[in-house]
Image (cartoon, rainbow, N blue to C red):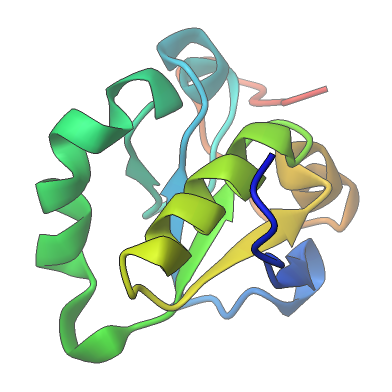
Length: 113
């Protein structure tokens, strides 16, 4: 396990205009997501990191989210090692939904729980 301490932020504190990176798989993304989030599944992340770097201009902080926080912590640790200002969204999209943050999805009633 990596000894790097990954900073965390609660879902309610993610700025509405923040760069949110969702690393969940396609089916999780389709069920419910934050509008405007960048979707790069963890399984594709290293190969697609350039997409994130195009969006993370001027050293923007990257808020990394998954379902509960495990995968996003790993991706945030990787980004920190690459010199990117990254934080893990504590509790993931479950905490996001419970905090009353808006969701969009591919169904009429998006949900992550």
